[in-house]
Image 1 (tube, one colour):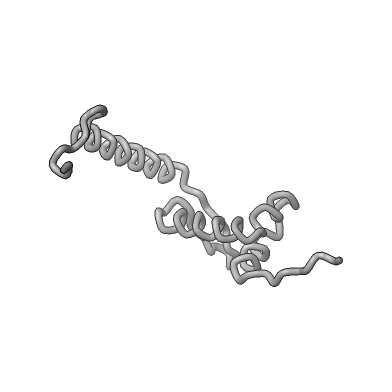
Image 2 (cartoon, one colour):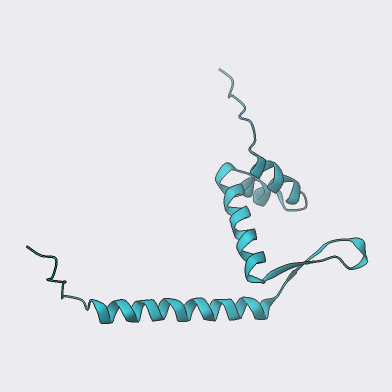
Amino acid sequence: MAKRKTKKTAAQQLVGTAAMGLPSPMRSAIGSRWGARLAIVVAIVLFASGIATVDWTGGTPHLKIDRERAQEVRREIRNDVEHIAERQENDNPWGQWPTENRR
């Protein structure tokens, strides 16, 4: 029996169009159902954080990646994670469980 062809989602069609210039293995990886969704989420995060921008000089779009902003975001995330870990360590050190909810 022949393999049934499934209809492409809107995310797959969008990512497939945007990935026309990529090599075939990359195109097929991000063209899958989960790959397309993941690629769109990553793109939204990159644009929202200011790491990626689109420059329209000369009438054609050019994708620009700001490496300095990427390093800044990376440092902010690292600091936030360290702060959360420190708070959790202070609130509940290893080996000590909260006793107020025990019966």
